[in-house]
Length: 381
Image 1 (tube, rainbow, N blue to C red):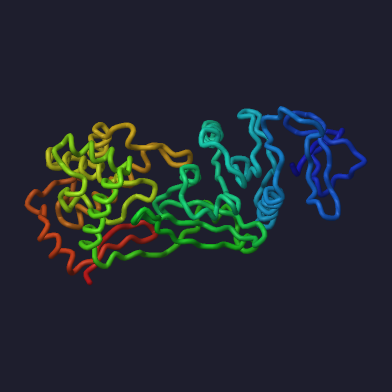
Image 2: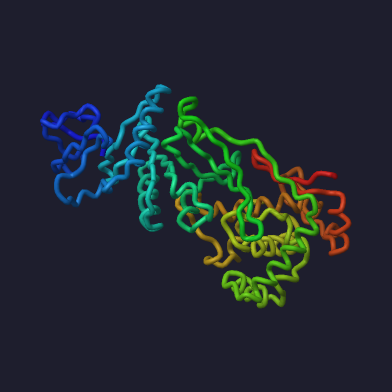
């Protein structure tokens, strides 16, 4: 804790506090102790074990320094902020509250997904925008764990991103999650110095211009089929569930029509559910022939099993689904199976549906491309 009240009810920073005075927690009002010395980073701690629900103790040195670093960045760039702002309406304390509405949570240690969702929901319910910034241990994990997925944000300009604060280096690292490939996530990273740019600008605006090419899309598709076959042989539970779904429709997951394995850019947070969404999308388009994009969304969602889609703490409801759907419709437009009419209707063209050999010939001269700002297309080699 970096802020406490004195007997005059004034908020005092731990850097300015003196040990001769008595201080109190701004949340629970219990007495706190100033811990300050030549080595120890100045901070307050509850004098006795406390049931203070708005604080989480003990704090690590990284967490204390990180909050100070964020506050210093706000001061440098002229942003109004409150360090350790207690919000009584949600009984939570933001690590830093910027301009009264943007809450920054610097998360250095693990917490339950349920608690993360609860805290995030409370912020949103009371019209606070919240950004979770990860500490070095969580932020530099090589594997995308279920917990870490809940710290990911999305916008149409930057795609899927999360944030990691490297306190000792004075850097904020933004990770851009592009797509999944062979059980791994293809990412790009960009570092920002907090001495040179506002944290708020990084969190809300700063993007990355990059592109990823798949030079041999047809061969990549064949590899995907083989991978699915191998996973079925290894009794991968997620893939087995998908196979059971397609079996009910007299189909085999590893031997579907080629247009269901494209584009080769599979969703970074999913493990194969893209294929189910694509199959349902193609079925709706083939049956309806002409409909709006919104009607397509509704029809596919109605037929998608609820367990197929997870909601994440910092992503909008159905956001993962919407991304999968829009990417697939972009692909169908590229191969002329879907055309957009002047009245914004999606029109299905049965004659343009290609078989295996036609796909092989088509992609012999083309590469798939995913770019940031977020866009999918094909380019002639």
